[in-house]
Amino acid sequence: MKNTKIEPSLIDQMRAFNFSSVIQTVKDAKIDWPIAGIFFGSGFLTGFLFKRYYKMFIICVSVGLVLIWGLDHFFHIIDWKTINNFIGDSPATQVDSFFVTASSWIVHNVAFSVSFCIGAVLGVFI
Image 1 (cartoon, helix red, strand yellow):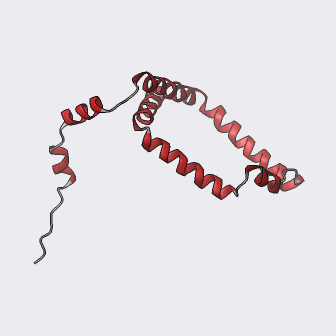
Image 2: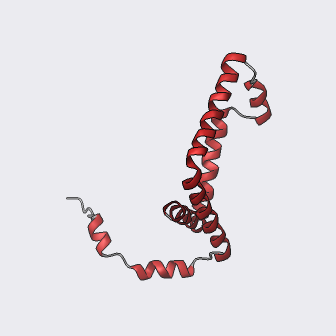
Image 3: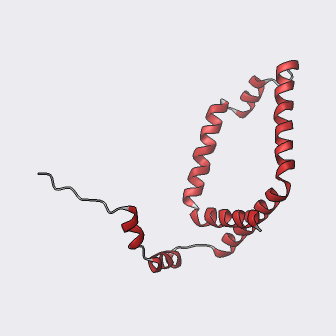
């Protein structure tokens, strides 16, 4: 018979959670606290402005997308081949590389990402 290790359930893991080890990990991490504060402040400002002006933001983005679509569809004003040559890659490659770069930055800067997210959530709810 195979000797298999039984993984603890989520509830068991939550019962065994040690908050002091998390505090010690944060203390041991080399976090630049002033920069984390700047990210928190910018997240707070972003959340606050989004809460206050989200309707205007949605309207501007929607109008911009409709305008680009209309110019391309009816008047063929937008030359996508020239834009692709200027960018250097196809749009799919650009989007993929953007998401890879962004996710890599977030993983390597977890403290700043978390402080921005906390600030943004507080900015939206305050």
